[in-house]
Amino acid sequence: MSVILTAIVVLSVVGAGCAGILYLIGQKFKVEEDPRIQQVQDVLPSANCGGCGYPGCAGFAVACIKADSLDGLNCPPGGADVMQKVAAILGRTATATTKKIAVLRCNGSCEERPHTNQYEGATSCAIASALYGGETGCTFGCLGLGDCVLTCTFDAIHINPATMLPEVDEEKCTACNACVKKCPKMILELRKQGPKSRRIYVSCANKDKGGVAKKSCSVACIGCGKCVKACTFEAITMANNLAYIDDEKCRLCRKCAPECPTNAIVELNFPPRKEKEVTEVTKVKEVTETENS
Image (cartoon, rainbow, N blue to C red; front, top):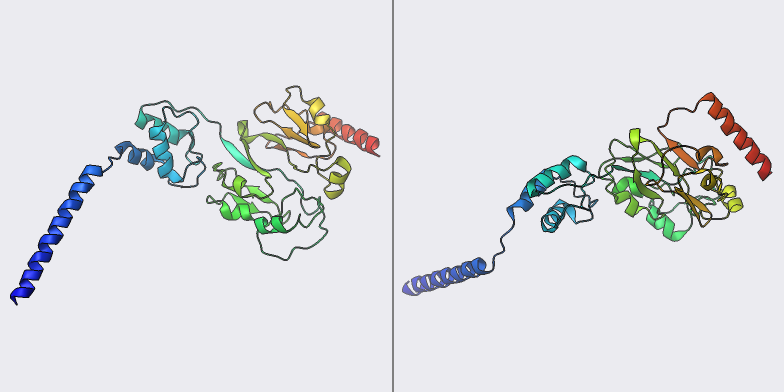
């Protein structure tokens, strides 16, 4: 019996000694965490979407603490209000940021972009894109299998069953950039929301020559360059048979859209054009079609 008691006492002493040593080591090498990290994290939306460029809200909070200024740091889901709270905690100034919205640079619905084959593989844009160009003649367009829908944690993207193209809900979109990174065709991008949510952009990513692009999709950009000539702000550039509108330079004057013979330029949330403007646009289309024929 005494042997058992002796063993228990010895083990208890050894255990207590080890615990004491571990405690001293922990106190010696412990890292003090800046209490402001938790304070910043508490005002963040806890979306952990990665839109800020850091691994979750905790990583973004640490980055804010370590940075000398908040320039270049932004929480897309939280927006300006959250960044103002972060700035108040850190005693700094938050740079004003422009709200952005994800847009799809493809307007080729089932009507405009006829199918030439049928895909029966895995329901994944990434897999389909790795296997072949798609069900239509346009190898640059949207596959419509919904990888962007699955990756959006804010339920801001849904596939339109009529067009088979993803549509973005402006009220829910936080510009977290997740869908942009997920799209294997790289046709989703973030653009400035614009005043009254008005935006103008070329909804096409087809880099084929005009005739080939038009044959694949009736609303494809054919690289004619008419929009470039119409823009007085040098906001439109032409590269690889494709026009692109820089939303930093664009002044939403709407002069470019009527010049586009294929309606590849999209105007969102603008009031209807006046009857005179509509007539002029129709004349431009008729002249263009005559020249093309």
